[in-house]
Amino acid sequence: MLYVLKYVTVFFLSLQICGQALAAEMTVNKIAAVVNGEMITQHELRQHTMAELSRLGGVSLESEKGREVQKQVLEVMINDMLMRQEAKRYKLSVSDAEVEEELNRNLQRSGQTRKQFEDALKNQKVSLAMYKERINNFLLRHRMATYMVSRKVFVTPEDVSAYYGSHRDEFAGEKTVDFSILMLPDGKNFQDIYQKIKSGVLNFEDAARQYSADQYAQSGGHVSAVFDRLPPEMKKLLSGMKDGQLSPLLRTKGGAIVIKKERFNEARPLTFEEARPRIEEMLKAPLLEERFKEYVGQLRGKSVIDIRI
Image (tube, rainbow, N blue to C red):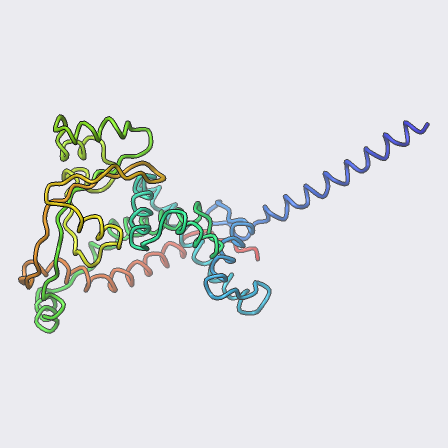
């Protein structure tokens, strides 16, 4: 009899525990919105909202301001989902290697080590996975804007010429540096490739075209950059190298990087033809953003969006 009572007690306790677990899972998986049949859970919304509230100085989610921020975050998440759905329809995508490359560039701009950078993200309640998702959305947004909207955005030659004439100080010239970069993703034999380049068995440019996982691969890894705009660590590295010198093999979390210093170029004023692409991009940027907002608005107008909070 005691055995039966003990068994019954354990059985009902198990039911209670399972019920609590199921309730917790249901809470996590409650739906915040459905966008063309694709769901945004309340758990996902809360994660993104808490990160934004942390950036704003720790505003409480339960406050009026917190609830307003949550609505704004949900709108952004809906727009991002619409953009991903539309990009999939047009077979546009962003690769993991492109995300990792942009992450490394952001890391270099910050002047922090990888650990310091990730710790700073944690302090803002942003996981590395969430940060990579933001990068992916940013790159995909740019790709979508270029593909869908840029054809409808124009600036006249007169506008470009007028800007150049009234902003000569912006084109006075800056010291630049030419170098080549080889980004080797995990899975490659770093040391073997590096030694072949170092010994001259493998040409750096050929190695970049064959092995590099960044946007400069097809140009042999060649980069020309304004020196003062580079991250402190990169400036220090290049300043200490001679023309034609190869850097050590620099390990990163996603693989390894090799730099080949080419030359410094002293500052000189940019001609109109040299400055024109930059001016056109600057003048197009606000127009492109405006047209893209209109495009997203049109997407929302023809989509089925069910907000449940």
